[in-house]
Image (cartoon, rainbow, N blue to C red; front, top):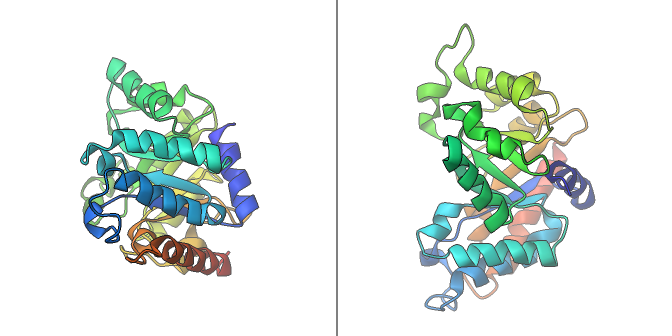
Length: 270
């Protein structure tokens, strides 16, 4: 199924705009998992199984797995989500961005090796660096636009012909790159008014919104400025606040409670 169709159905079926970021940090794992050979997979699997009916998507961060030599765990985790929780799409948070055959290999890595439904990209090198991803019409291509980190403004806010660069990025992707209807943008919760400016340009295009939870983004402001006309249009991402809500053997239940709280908070402002 097309990523966008899966996402829209998950929004409706689970009444949720929550995206759970899967960023494993073994130092934060519960004591009973520390030292276990397959702890990374077991931790993430249990989080997924406890929250799958509460989310619209999962977003594993590839560096968190690769740094631990746990790429095999990432492959098995995505396969587990698809097998046990069909209909919940998976975004590989890789922020790739390169040209030519290298971009083709990155697309194959994301979609053929890991079987992700979507991937995050950096558009800085231009359309040819994204084209191998854009050509996969059934897959989501989620491009950085206005990121949540404090240094995002170093380049994204620079004047570009009378408008900030991030709005030129949004305009170009919405107008020229989205022929297959498979594009989305990353827009941080920490800049809600700028999020609204992006929404005004891109219409109902989905927005992946990091920065809620540990980074301090305001849910009400994100919904006010970022939701689409039908009250959806957002994948509001939280990682640490859900993953590490508890540190005992009931960590997965604690994660579920945190996901419910975030879902319900979001829905109050929809």
